Picture (cartoon, rainbow, N blue to C red):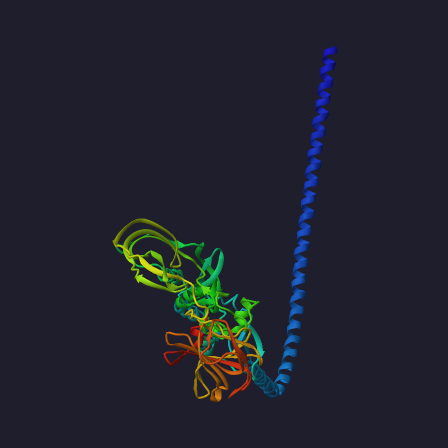
Length: 526
């Protein structure tokens, strides 16, 4: 019974669940139908709204088109009335604009420059830019160097008013660029000990310059001359450099610069008869240059044996060569002296003439710019023996007044005012020394006085014979201290200077005569 009641309860529960589920399905179906009906109604309402909106839009569009057409018709009528006037004004404006553009174009141009340097004026930039390639090409050929003009970095333009300017043609532009000295260029420099000395157009030109320098000091090899070494003493290098056309030298110019670019000091030894101005002429320098190199030098006080320093141009490089050379040379003879009481002291005579010998030498010679600085004899062969010279010297006491054979200066501390030679339309037979009246005058050598007294334009005058056809004369004297026939010794005072005879001022006129013919005294004085 209990079991039956339990099943009864389960059936009742299942029946209630089925009834609930049927009711839920019925309600769900009702809700779905209602929702679908609402959606259909809403779609119908939307379609009706859109249809009504189209009608309104179509009506408004028609009205707008009507008003626009009406407005355009009125404007078209107005424009028709003003059409002629508008066209007239527009044409005038166009003409004015064209005229303004034409005037502006005609009156403006360009100033062109190369690396900031003003060159000229052109109408158009193309007048310059289109010749740059040609200029670079021609200059490169002419100078055998890579010369390039960069349009962007080297050339600049500036717009300017050109009515008052001279306008360059293309040919003028070409000439200005071609002959411009500060044009950039690639060249080759010759460096001496790291310092740029000269610049040439190419490496081949630089080598040609150095070859020219070699040629001045290097001889052609032969059987008798072989070089072991040829080179420069300095460090000489060829390097590519960036430079300007103005700094590029030709091969000839560069060779000259190197050959004359150095300097060396030489010493000149004053000889008898030398004068300051004579030395200047001989050495090709001015007195100012000579004095600058020798601050203590004075015009009026130079004597034989004095040394004068000079700076002489020499090569900037030193060509050093080592050669093995075979050559012939003299062999110096010896001199032997013998004494004799048959002659006076100071007298001598050669009893046997010396004669040079000859030998063939093979030597290693080191030269610097052609001058031998080192020599090592490798072998030698004497072909002709030298002959010894024999000189006999006197030992007998010499009379004081006997001529020495050497002429000394007859005056000291005076200024040479006139040399031997052509002067005032005739020959000046001696030399003049300007000095004050009363300056001591000395015999140039020992001898015999052959004349004293007044001698025409010479005034007070003394003449001395020194033997062997040599005589000296002293003119324009103030006092005479010797007499005719008197024997005098070298350095003996024979009078004082003066201003007698035909004289423009106090001075000594001095002459040297050899066998009756006047000679330049400065060639004999010591």
